[in-house]
Length: 144
Image (tube, rainbow, N blue to C red; front, side, top):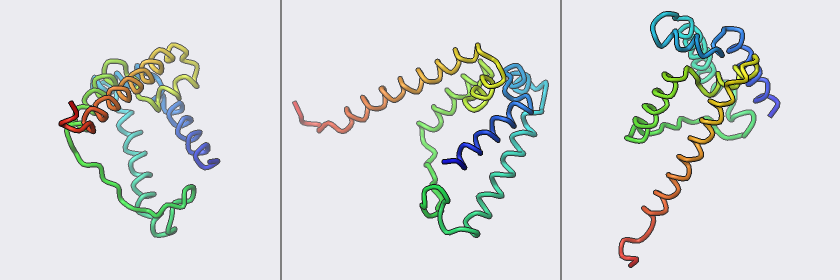
C-alpha cells in the first residue's frame, strides 16, 4: 500500500502544480480557451502507456497484489455510453473531475466539498439503482 500512497501523492502534487485542480482551468479547456489540460493528459497517457508496455516484461505479476498481468477489456455497451455521457455532462457543467476534486481540496478550495458530496451521493444512488435492477433481473419469471 505505500506504493499506492506515493502514486496518489505524485498524482495530487502534479494536478496542483499544473493548476489542473482549479475548476476554472478545466472549464477554460472545455471552452477551447486553454489547452494546458490536453498536455497534462497526454503526459499521463504516455507515462501510463510506457508502464503498461514495460512492466509485464519486467515482472510476472503485479507488485501489490501478486495477480498476473493480463488485459481486462470491458465491453463497450449501453451502460458505458450512458455513464460516460453523464460523467461528461457533470464534468462540463462543474469543471470537476474526481481526481482533480481531491487535489483541489488539497490546494485550499473548500467549496469543492459540495462537488465531492455530489459525487459520493451520485455513486451511492447509482449503486442502489443497480442493486435493485440486478435483483429484479435475477428474480425468476414465474415467481407469482
